[in-house]
Image 1 (cartoon, helix red, strand yellow):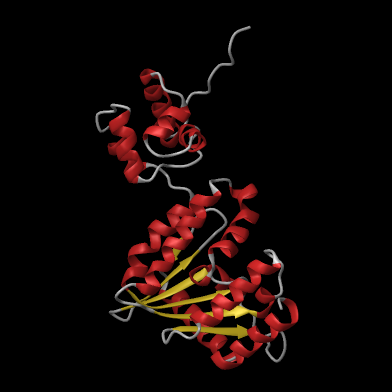
Image 2 (cartoon, rainbow, N blue to C red; image 1 turned 135 degrees about the vertical axis):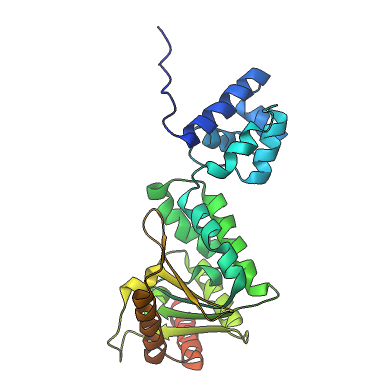
Length: 273
């Protein structure tokens, strides 16, 4: 019985993956053997070959060298389409490094304040729908947090909906560690977390939950809105001003820092003793 016909690549990512496969075969290596050479698992090599992910540049350097690709893989790498979580990180990393202030509003604990295990639980819930390597997503999210310890140390102002502290997105012990981690971070002079409570407020702006606002050194505000697949920068001055004003109103409506700490302590005592 003849072997199934292999589908021809239809985009550059698929062509790149197919080239890795052909070069690997030419060396007489299995995916596991190639993975050993470049310090990865065979399953990660399979993801690259199936165009389910794009190798980071440092891994591409190793692949190019070990597969004797003559810089072909390196030359193609900048033109490959990144997975959404990598594209987000690539899009905002330079801006975030220059930011003096970062503002977010979220229905879960914001990514910049997440523990590794909480981040893994949140990302694992979406992986069946968005594909990709879970641990790679976790590492990308953890890498972003380095900005809080950078020489610039931007101000971080987060408004978090009260539902974030009650929604069961992870095991109780993970949630307890996450809330304790939040309380510790809230002691930092440049970190502000305000809870938007269930009661005594009339303002919920769901559009802000997909937006991150950065204030740069020259006074400009940059806004990025994340979609289901890919995000976009909002450049319309009127829309940027509107989102900034909405966020300022959220801060006015939310509990202050001390009241927010008290609420988190209350949740810890009642639900995660």
